[in-house]
Length: 64
Image (tube, rainbow, N blue to C red; front, top):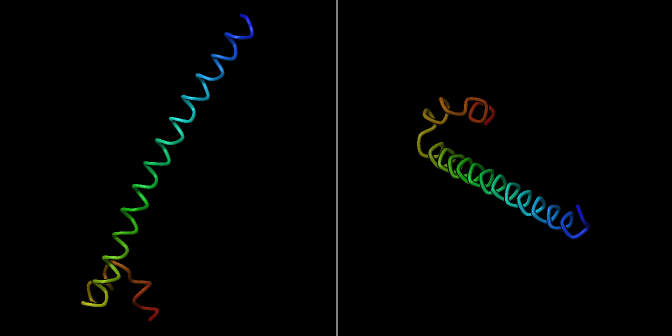
């Protein structure tokens, strides 16, 4: 295989690698966003009803 063909293969491999990395990063950011939103809702609900928060987050409520 000549040099030009090797360079094209490397470029194609790097392009696919970048697509995979960005898709994994997007998936992880969605998970973190969902976790953050859930944590905020739990925090808001703990102010409204401490007994519900005690069931969901026992260590957080018992330390206060």
